[in-house]
Length: 160
Image (cartoon, rainbow, N blue to C red; front, side, top):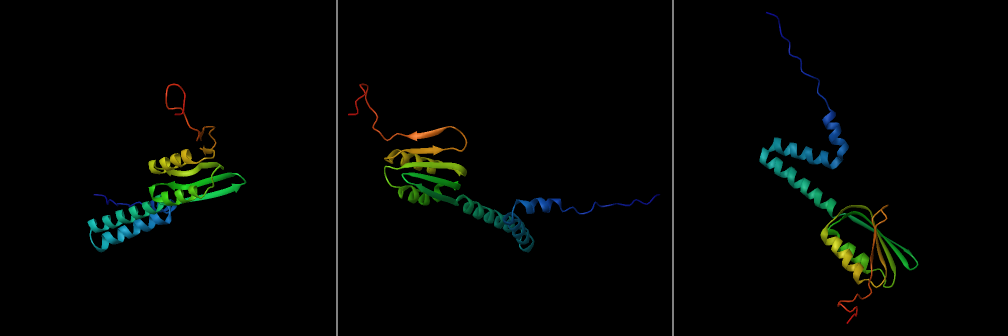
C-alpha cells in the first residue's frame, strides 16, 4: 500500500484583507465578537457583536453635516450624511435660522439616506417659508419649487 500524504492548503489571509478594507470599525466589532465567544460562550459573544454593530449603526445614522452659505439674499444649504429623525433637531435649527424673504437652495447631492420624518419636515418648512425654496437633487434637472402664495380652494378660483 502506498503512503497517502494529505496536504493542507496554505492559510490565506484574503478574507482578513477584505475585512480590513471595509473599515477599522468592522474589524474591531469582529475581533470583540470573536474574543467574547472564546471567553464566554456563543450566545454572549454573538449578542455582544450585534449590540456593537447596532450602536455603530445608530451613530452613523445620526451623523448629518449641514453647511449654510450666504450669498446676499440667497442661501445654499448643503446636507451631507444621513438625514434621519435623530438629526432632525439640527436640521430644524439650521432651517429656522434662515431669514424670511430669502431664496434658499437645499442641496441633496451628498445625502446617503433621507427618512420620511426629515423629508416631511423639509417640505413643511419650505411651504411655510415666505421666500423661494428650491430642492436640488444633484445633476438632475428636476427641482421642486415651493410656492407660498395662496391657492384657490373653491371652484370659482377665489381664495376665500
